[in-house]
Length: 116
Image: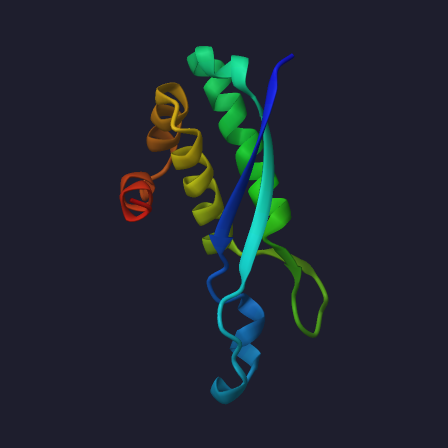
């Protein structure tokens, strides 16, 4: 199985925890660095590209996970995760993966266009 590693950086848009902080105490968005792993040979087919996309989403969710203030319940910053996936798809730049991504998200075209 051939796999490829890519380093993708995505800006974390405000986390939900900042809602409880005073505006003067709000932190600026942080940068995350996400090393993704995917099976390059899977991109040869549409179902394989869908599997790679699902894996990218899982990896992005893991990277954008945080504990909510007060309850310490695990949460995922959806903006962070979506941007990380969009950046990964744009960076990998494979037609099957791009088609799978655009077919599963309403914001896909906008997110990919904003990365140029």
